[in-house]
Amino acid sequence: MPGHRRYNFGVLSELQQKDVWEGWLGGEIRADYFGDMCGRYQFQHKLLTWMTLLFSSGAAATLMTDWLPRGLQWVRPVLALLAAAISFLAVLQQYLRRVTECADLHFRWNRLANEYKALWDDMYSSDALGRLRALEEKEAELSKSGTTLPNNERVMRKWQHYVQRQHGFSSVA
Image 1: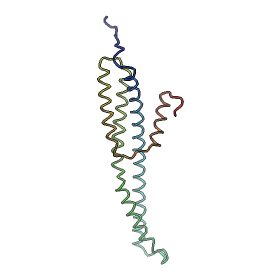
Image 2: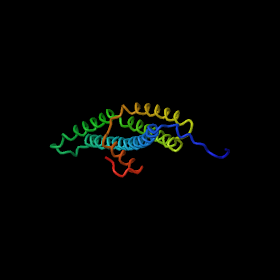
Image 3: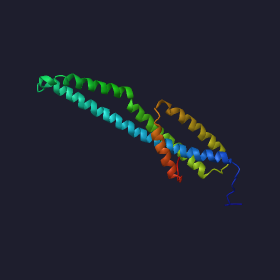
Image 4: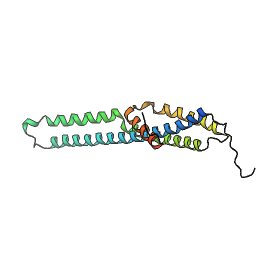
């Protein structure tokens, strides 16, 4: 019949429909998590940069002037050592690399969540099963991508509760 849409209700099983729903929510949770972690790493990098500037400027100021009393001569090497230690920590932590990775993972998980959502809205299409398999493959690749970053379970739980509330879960365990 022209203009009449025919649905094939047997394309995705109930379990596969559940996988689509969970993929959608899981993608949103991870996207929010990596966006949050990106901001946290940016803040930590900025903090270390400012601390390095403060301590190195203080060390330079004490070296160029004679205003320090004899009893405070220890301040010069301490400020220089603090500046060096914080610089070393900044290099060791690699916050800028983490920011870049988290920003990329935020984008990719967000895109995957949107693709799961689109499949949820069209799960009775004839190509739904193929799309689900492709999304599951993307999800596996993305899960592997984030393994170099530390896992912050508290932040992950925060975003899990948030996304579940956004989707109508009244009580979250």
